[in-house]
Length: 352
Image (cartoon, rainbow, N blue to C red; front, side, top):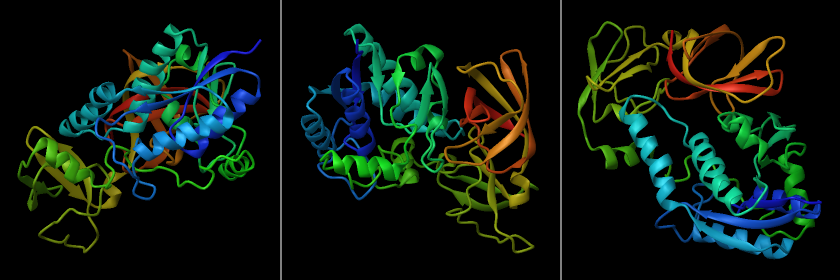
């Protein structure tokens, strides 16, 4: 007997094909588009942004082609609180958040899943590129599109009610299948960047909400080498847009090494100074099988993977990397893997 499945349909090709596959497998599928913007734009700008009126119409057309019921759920207020306001608050605190990860955690697999289960659905299906077998999350076959990292924050219970139908397919195969099925989104560009900052100007978005707060840019010796209009406009590892008044004595480029929100200062230095080998993480989530054999960690979406050893003490994780990493920022997620299987995740607190 088939399951009652709620298919989250963004208006893109991945979620449309995921819904089609679940329906074809004999499950009772209902499509839902999440309206996450209180004032949606009528049109996308290329591949930037999502949650536009165009996206909701694309999702509805896909549901009609598949032959499943379709609804729009207004999640704008919850999204504003749990994703947008969290994003702004994290930057204000000198941390670098990942809003896609927070959206998966708080919206798609908390708010939506809770409502789906209350309405009698058995599971929520999405178009994420990741494998999920018997509640165990692992990487997609398409390494370039793998999204297991941004799903690494989900709990075992949430994963037990999730379906990711695309984990065994490449993006090219998904687009080909969409065309065969007559889905008009087959060639629609992927959404990227931060969906609620459609023009891609993160610094401008933050300045509008946090205001101007002039401060100093310091070198590693504490000398003032420039000024800024708000420490919230920077992230660890950033090189461009620093507007430094004095070049380094050796002529090498400078990078953001640290952000101190209390003193409103940004410290810069050479790329070598970004190298860290030890990372302390908080709020661990163990959502996979007990690790047997070597562990690895991924520190950003589509970032490099590092072998590591792990010590857990007092609710914190201390990761020692097998080689130095650069640009590791507090607030981002460290997702742990055993081979290609997700073991768990935690939030980066500091690195050295």
